[in-house]
Image (cartoon, rainbow, N blue to C red):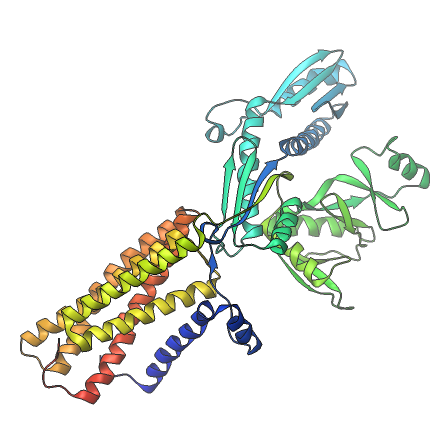
Length: 539
């Protein structure tokens, strides 16, 4: 147990050295970090939270009417398809935030009324806490019916839209989950967003990501003669279920079916890349099984035709189908730079916003406690560190107390390195987690040293006592720390904001304390034992 091969010694010292290297930028100041950067050395620091250094505060207003209009379009498409499938003649269109359906004959009305009522299904009761149907259908006489979104469904859609918006924003702004930002529902149609430690450039980048709904869709092109094209562009009449979209410069247009072939919801992943022939920036994409099947079927049936790729209602490219595309993957080309292609990939991976967001309120937040909090945290940490160090010296003597204190200091360095590597955000709860870790970090050493004392009291020699102490203490140390780690991980995945900050520092501290106490401190003890060869342990 006390023997270390050269390979083990190398990896242990290398891990400690890398910890020092990655934690160093937090201690050298801005000029020191610039020097490290020029030397191609790690220069990333841990971020300070909103309560320590301020950041961006925004109140976002969800355009629920935009989401309602999209729902109306989806319901209109469903009604048209259902009536067509039953062979019922009717005209359906959106008018005054409702769907107006006019049947062509009394026979069509007789069969069509039930078809309309079948389109109204039960609203998810668990989501709104009550029953109700999705649509409200009323007869206007003269074979006309008005179909409206029910109040219960509007309530459900509003809740779902805000929840989905929060989820998408989290993926867009903090894809790694380390910024420790705050995203929460505010009132009935607003979202509170707080991002710590962002400068003006980063704030503008965040605002751009918020404003873009990133709705990606593929649409069928409808060839049209100049007269039909002009009539459609001037909104005097388009083919049923179609609309004109500007394409390229010079006033050219394409008439596209409003119903999508596939949408961004069918995307599995997206990533920036280079065009296989001209090396221009593109966005590669991969569909899920459903999207791949739909795209394959469509391209096989429409070979030689154009189809358009729309992003937020604007055509970004309209290639010609040269053959069936059945691999489930492809690429989008346009006037991209690598940066814009990367940004679009991020937005597509995070998903489309279900409705447009408007920044209703924006301000830069100053630190609530700022430098005073940091100073108080440093003082508390130092007091805790000194107190623990003196306790170890008094309890286990100078040598073994020093071994434990070296392990404790290394543990703190490795925690700072871990937070820096992750780019995690340190808040007041995070500082509390570090201070708690200082107290907990020596638990393993206490277990080991007490076991060594017991073994020595039973007459074992120094080498045998130390070897047995470390070996038999390993299981209880792992049991205690694994259970605490489970609690920390639960806090991280279930909690949010400050709770997650506390969980991150606690989890990293637990892992590092086991390494420093069980591995690093044992190496130090082993080196001292071989050199000093004591006849009695000073513990």
